[in-house]
Length: 352
Image (spheres, rainbow, N blue to C red):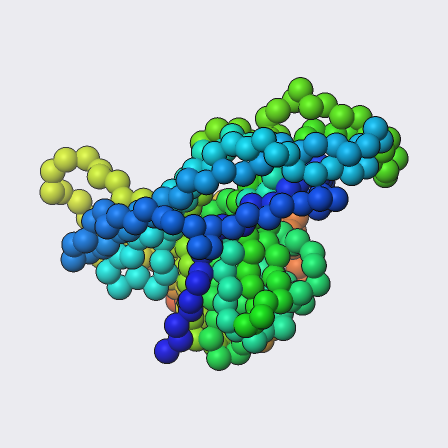
């Protein structure tokens, strides 16, 4: 196995940018929770899950101070405000991922708060989920990048994924002991409007303070360690499970009904065969199935339905039938061949 050490500490730095980009301050002061005294409490420990609560309270600069009349340079103020961070680590029985909930009480302006994961992995690339894709980018290029549900770093033998339902920015850094994953939780900035490309000509709106994110903020995310690369793991499945959990509901009373105790509306077989849509067609009574292959390998898979398939046609994103070959199916099983980085849409009709 693999042990990851010193994961999940916080880094607070100055923010000189605006809504479009992060910019470093001319004179910055970076503060981390490494070495800070924390309060650690075991909240719950039973057979199904256990949770620890870890709390920090420290002071950070209250805002930025401009150093010239053109607003070209700034530093962090000597005045400070308290920053309170509380994190819960939740491990459930048979879980593949560690659940984390972080709450922040922000009272300061003009700063960026990130959570840092020194992976210790000798990785050259990061892999971030995007629309219908997982994008590879170099480690250590000094840039922030977006991601959707997960970002992963792997050395080919072991990997570490960060899974989120709303956090969207990361940077992959080169550390002394390997790749470091930095996730942006908070970016508090001054509202500016700049149409000519130079900050000195930007119109400043310091009175519009919503962009400073003052108040209580809560974040939920998973940490998913795995063997191999992301393609060989269940990281996509974990990301889907976290973002789209099953919701159990109770139907009408009584014990009468014609459904069995166990029943599946649709079953997908094939690792990294990802469901994007299953809906009624816009202009017909067909059902649209859309799947995609974000990996770098061709995939063979199948989709099993609760009814027998009557007809199946390939369609485009406008739901227009494409002439030529047709999808292969037998009974209630649709067989699929997906080339790498391919999106596939199929219009289905079922027997009554």
